[in-house]
Length: 359
Image (cartoon, rainbow, N blue to C red; front, side, top):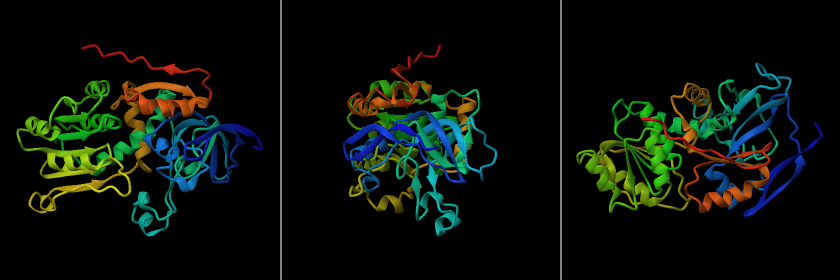
């Protein structure tokens, strides 16, 4: 297919161009996908500003995409042209030490679509056929585009390994809202969300959080968590912000024997001050989690299909592909925006009007 397509290309930090580029040529082991919807992630902003993967530029970013198969490589199985699919964006070698120990996220040549190689902020994207997961007809494109962030949160929850009735505090009310919803779906209680935006905290409550803490309305979030847990602290904390200060708070609000799931990404040179005796005398634990992979896609699709998780209250707006750069700027200034989508076929903005569920 020697044709051109529209794409948003990050050429250098802070330089993005909406331009014509060649439609990707697929190998026998790949499929070509016509992008229907691609969500904007914080990492897209990090790449645009040069904070992450600057050595990969120029690059078409966007990794939260869903689309229809437009072309199929000869080795593909179980897929047809027209199938709607979400894609495991993780590209692993399959044979290094980590891959052979079922730790593909630690692969020595690990890459991700839209982060290290061209992604979904374009009319078409190519992907390995084995990474494609069919989307059920009952699921709309916007929910399907939410599969990728759902996989990241689901993987973190599996790392957390909470028991039923475990108490959980989530620091952050972006994807932290989803972390709380998944914790609630797994039978955790109470689930506490800590953040700074009233509108987002309200969404967290509507999606299942038992308590919310606005950091601008209290002197000490740690003390508030202690009050809610009878002075013991929570069984689990998910840090979903990515600053040294919030990581320090996370350790302080854990109970003895509790576990921190590290999800928020700090700058490479950032360091948090943690008292080592907490690990020894308090037997506290920490586990990192960076993304979803493999069967997390099938699990996420099923949870969304059967509405165990209903993320629609997080949906803010959808914009045409040509407006991606404007949307990135708005996400920086308007913190009440949560999830913003980009649609190559859209000609004008779509706003999601959220209705509160009847009590």
